[in-house]
Length: 323
Image (cartoon, rainbow, N blue to C red):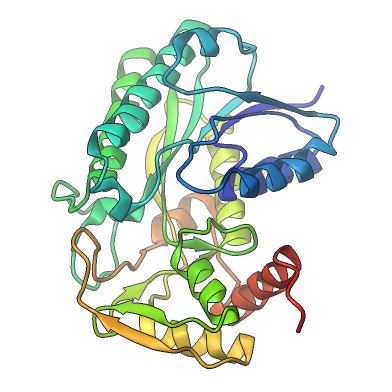
């Protein structure tokens, strides 16, 4: 009998790749998403087209804050993967109440549903943003993360605290996964790489915030999916699990180096407009992945160049660009 997984945020970037992965492994996948208007619904609908080709995929449009919607779902999942959230560091500065409502109240409703249905295995999507401005790293899971610099980061840290309460009180096994700047085909349009490609193909200038020496630990989507899958296997095969893991690449890239790589991949020159650093954004992310390597055998293998080439191929096809 095939395993069953529930994926919240299944129509999004990471969620659609994850659902596709498990469907190809012959799992039964239930996806939920509320099509938050944060970006154009068309991107998610295109992601769902890929998933709907699989007979083992079921989709429900619902808001994770709605208790009645939760109780309409099945109650026999082997695994729950909670990706759904209001995303983005900078947008959270404009809507702190909305971020708290979805990311905390919504997560609590999910945990309450798991408690009611006696479901015991959870992966929770956290974020590298919880580290705040912690220097140049590498950032280790044992570091204190009590000084967030955005509302989004504070909701993700709060989510980790919530999962611990439900682990301690109700024996729900949990792995919190701190993602580090995931990129690749189907990436959200609000994220830097996607925005840069759109600007460069439209021959428009790109706004660069800061002096180009900020850095991000860009992690290719397939490496992230492999880390999630390894985490899922670990949490399902073991009891009394509560862990927090970084899923990064362990190779931060400076902004000006990212721009150079994009120019090389596209064969186009980027027109830059320099702007002051934005409030709420961190200077650097750099994942220590020693714990994930030891616990899961996690080993990201996709270089920035290879990942950007894969994204470029998808971008050209998706936007029907004539080269």
